[in-house]
Image 1 (tube, rainbow, N blue to C red):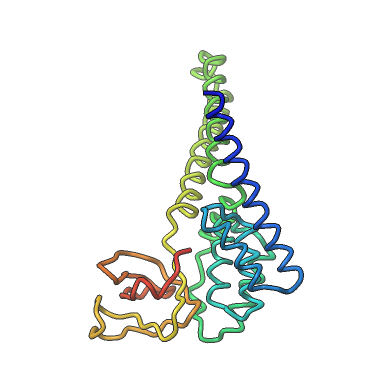
Image 2: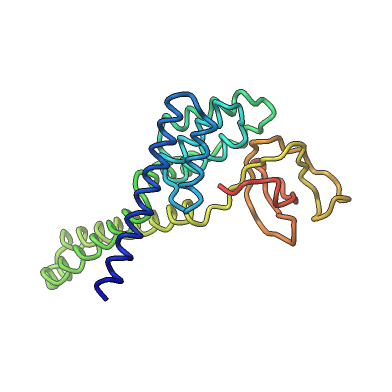
Length: 246
């Protein structure tokens, strides 16, 4: 039994070390201007589902230097999915989008949505969930210690209500971040000359053209076709292989 545990430990350590090595080799190649080599190493890490903010942002910048803007936009979006408030990444993404004038700007978000996105983006879904559990524990302890006072004292009732309010907010924030990270429906158009069609077949009428790097949102799928919504709210169909999932 102990020998089996030792073998598993050695195997796991070897895998982790190899991932660190690939990432370090990618960073070294990037610093030397060998962007294709950097991407090859980064892909070896990503293929094992070990992608993170640093990996995605480095891949995005590597593709940007190679002028592969659609791929660059895809990985910038992947990075922002994890850290939506990172200013440097937002600026780099905006720079790539600006040098592609065919890309849709999209509709301006409502101010309340911007504030919600900023606040919830401060922490990951896991941290928001931990914070909500901490608040729930505090609330339970406070109620137990002040059970009689809460019933007859407005001050203690207000404190209980405030803790409850923050608990509900943190739970909603955790759910929102989980949806953004693990159930993100965003896609980036990767192919040239992609058309948004009214139906899931080539003979369907064309609604609009989608330039490489355009952002769309998955709604449904049938066979080789995916129903998406563009940034202006138009609903149509594209071939699934023409877009990459954020």
